[in-house]
Structure formats: C-alpha cells, structure tokens
Amino acid sequence: MDSLNLLMEGFSSALTPMNMLWVLVGCLLGTAVGVLPGLGSSMAVALLLPVTFALDPTAAFIMFAGVYFGGMFGDSTMAILMNTPGQASAIASTFEGHKMAKDGRAPQALATAAIGAFIGGMVASVLVVFLAPALADFSANFGPAEFFALALFAFVATSSVVSDSAVKGLAALVIGLGIATVGIDPFSGAERFSFGAPQMFDGISLITVTVAILALGEVFHIASRIRRDPAGKQISSAGRPFLSRAELKEAAPAWARGTAIGLPFGVIPAGGSEIPTFISYDVERRIDRRRKNPKFGKGAIRGLAAPEAAGNATTGTAMGALLALGLPVSATAAIMLAAFQQYGLQPGPLLFDRSPDLVWALLASFFIAMVVLLIINLPFAGLWAKLLLIPAPYLYAGITVFCGLGVYATSGAVFDLLMLLGLGLVGFIMRRHGMPLAPLMIGVVLGPLAETSMRDALLSSNGDYSVFVTGPIPLVLYGLLFLVLAATVRSKVVNRTRKDV
View 1 (cartoon, rainbow, N blue to C red):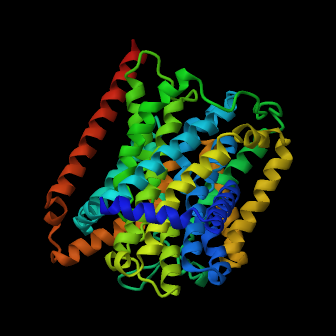
View 2 (spheres, rainbow, N blue to C red):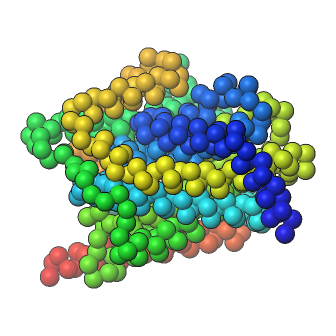
View 3 (tube, rainbow, N blue to C red):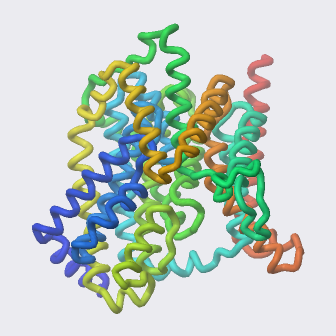
C-alpha cells in the first residue's frame, strides 16, 4: 500500500505540464532516432546527456525514460518495414514482421508491435513498482557459473531455431564469437586477432557490427538483386492501421507469453533484451509447428507479437534493476547510470530513501511514456508504413548514409567506416548463402559475457569444471537446453521422414 501511495505522489509530480512536455520530447526523439539504422536509444541518451545538465534531475531522467522506451518502438519500425533493425534487440522482429510488410500488412505489423510493446512495458512497470525486492533477490542468485549456463543456452537455442541447417546456424555463431574475441584479452592483457592494428585493440564496436551485418548487408543484398527484380521489392503500404478481432485473438497469447519471458531478463546482466526476444520467438515457432496450418515463415503475427512484448518487458524491469540495485543490464542503462552519478546520485536501495521524489516521479513516467508511445505509434502506423513508397534506390541510399553517420558518430574514426564496409560484405555473403544472422549477433553480444563468466568460475574453483553444474539455476538451464536440443532433433527427423515418404 505504501508503494501505491508513493506512486500516486510520483504521478502528481510527473503530470505537471513541463514534465509531460519532457516525456513527449523523449518519446518523439527516441522513436525518431530508433527509426534510423545504427542509431538507437543508447546513442540518443548519450547525445542528449550534455543537453540535460540545464534541467533538474527529475525532468532529465523523465526525458531519458521516454527516449529509452521510444527507442525500442523506433528500432522495431525499421526492422519491420525495411528488415534493418536499429539495434540487436529488434532482430527477432524482422523474421515475421518484415514478411508481414512484404505481404501488404505493414500497418498491421506496426500496430502489433506497438500494442505488444505497450503491454510488455506496462506489465513490467507494475512489477517494478510492487515487486522490486523480489527482483533484487532473484538477480543476487546469479554468479559466473549461472551466467555461463545462460549464455550457452542462448547460443545453442538460437543456432538451432533460426535456421533449417544446424551447420549454418553453428557456423554463424562461430563467426560471431570470433568477432567478439578481437582485441585485448581482459585477463592476460594479450593481443588477440587484431593483426597488430592499434584501432582493434579495444575490439570491434557492437554498433559497428550491428549496423554492418543487419543494415549494410541488407543494402548490398538488395542492390545485387534490384536490377533483376526491380518490382519485387515494392511493398504495399496500404491497409488498415489497426488489428481485426481475429488478429487480436491470434496475437493475445503471444503478447502474454512474450511478456512473461521478458520480465526476468531485466534484472540479469546478459546483454539487454536480445535473449528474451529470441527465446520468445523460439517458443512461438515451436508452438506453431504443432498447428495443422503452420504460419511461421509466411508472416505469422505471433512471431512478431511475442518478441515485441518480451523486449519492452525486459526494458521496463531493466529500469527497475538500475534504480533498485544500481545494476545496468544494457548499454542505455549503463549510460543512465553515468548520468545519475554526474548528478551526484547513486542508484541502489538508498536512492529510494534519499531521493524518493525523483524515483517515484520517474516510475510514474514509465506508465505515462507507454501511453504516449501508444498514442504516437498506433494511429500513425499507416504513416510510418508510407516509408515504403520511397523508391528503393533512394531509400537504400539514404539508409547507407545513415549507417555511415551512425557508426562515425560513435567513434569519429575512419577505420570504423572501413570495418563497417568489410563486415557489411560479410553480412551480404551470409545472406547469399542462406546463413542466419541471429546466431552471429548473439555470439557478438554474449561472447564476452560467456568468456568472462567461464574464466571467473574456473578461477574461483581452482580449475574445477564441476562448478558449472553446481547449483539449481545452471542445472535448470542445462535441462531446458537438453529439451530444446531434443525437440529440435525430433522435429528435423520427423520432417526428413515426411520428405522421404
């Protein structure tokens, strides 16, 4: 009851005209920046950080929250329309969302994403308000062995689900892990796979990899085919920007399952919302395989609804983890932690006692931001879809420019532009040979976490490998991994048997 009273006080502060203006500005900026390939919520927060020093802390962080949630909406918009997600968290939305757009259902796909993000974000906000202590206890149970088991689960599950060929899926994963190991060894300080280039000692930026593989690789792929099939890429933007009753009934269970999957990952430092979006997609695909008329691969609305709900559910609880624990689980949360420190504030349990006005106004702004984003995105789904009316050569040329600007803005180094070009060619080659991109991205995102967790666990146990199977959480994760592998093998055997018959 105390939490509810404090939340009401937070609403009274957040609903002032100026704070409402900052919520609106943050949501608009986050959505607009997220639409541009290579630019996402993390970059928007980083670029706006110096601007907010003239604001009081409450207004600044209310705007940051709007940018954080708005970036998730914007990332999904380009993922659906152009198959070029702004950040890795929107990759899973491209699989079925872009197929819906190509099938002439772009407005419905954007509406599905908007409603799913709203549901996931609202449920997460409620959970953060009332169950923060329980979330803190859950996160405290994770050590190096648990993180390694979680990363291994993500590696194998993703490689097996997104490709019909396990060999291609594992090959893509190995490429991603190889990219993740470039740079200085964090334990020994030795140089690894940098070929003596000082520019690579810090590794390859995740932003560069994401933009190159997902966006620039798609541009190269389209450019190689546009002369042979100039009309093949014209996607209709017409249609109703809302969901029918049948579509709502189809998407509702996926929204619920995606939200449930995404909530726990907001308090686990495992790279943000990438893992839950892939897991939720995996769950829906496996459920779809049991139906008489499978729809995945043809623009299944459930394959879009679940990842969107999971991504925003993770984002919501990640903000709760930042406030209650001082634990940043994503790049954007890490930047916001730095912002708190620059204002002389330290997120954690004491923040609720020392700055209750700021904390509860910020929590109230989560709910307001969800409503504002739904109002912004749902009615304008058809307007966003009209991006597809731009002629393909001009549109993809513009995407290429923004790819370069996005990468150059993060480092100011020409070398990163050359790396962007090289990795873009890798993405193009992978597309031409039918290799999935998701395992590569998961390898890049979670490779450092897996390596650090494995070596920390071995150091703490004096090289005893049994540490990886000690404790209930690793055993549960390995058990789930075994079930995933068994189900994958069974489905492939059944499909091959049917083909032979």
